[in-house]
Length: 138
Image 1 (tube, helix red, strand yellow):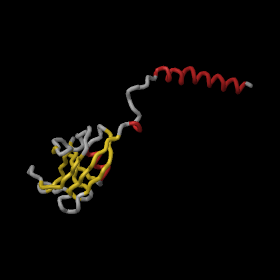
Image 2 (cartoon, one colour):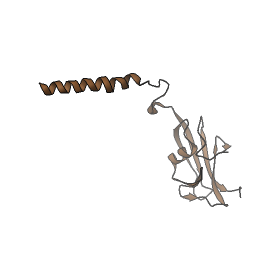
Image 3 (tube, rainbow, N blue to C red):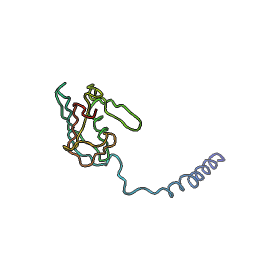
Image 4 (cartoon, helix red, strand yellow):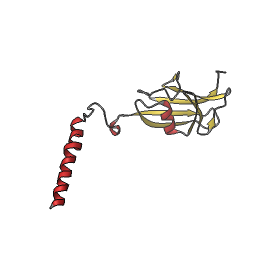
C-alpha cells in the first residue's frame, strides 16, 4: 500500500504544480483559425515557356498570404538563385534564364510584378502568369 500512496502523491503533485498552472495561464487565441480551416482561394497559374515548349495552365488553390514564389513551387519545378536578401527565379520546369538574354517574369491578374516573387503576397488573386522572355534590363 506504500507504493500506491507514493504514486498517488506524485500524481496529485503533478496535477497541482504542473498541469493546473499551465492550463490556467494558457489563453487561447479565439481569432486564429487552425491551418486546416483557412480559406482556400482558386487561382489559375499559366506558364509560357517562350516557345521552347507548349505553354501550360494549372488550376490550383492558395491561402491568402502565400507568396507568388510558393505558389509557383506548388505547380512547377523551380530553381532559385539568392543574391544577398534577394531571391531570383532561375529556372521553371528546367527552362533556365540566361543572364542578359532571357529571363522569367510574372504578372498577377494582368499586372506586371514590381517585386520579387518571394516578396509578393497573394490576396484575392485569380491569375498568375509566368513568361520566359527577353530581359530588357541590361
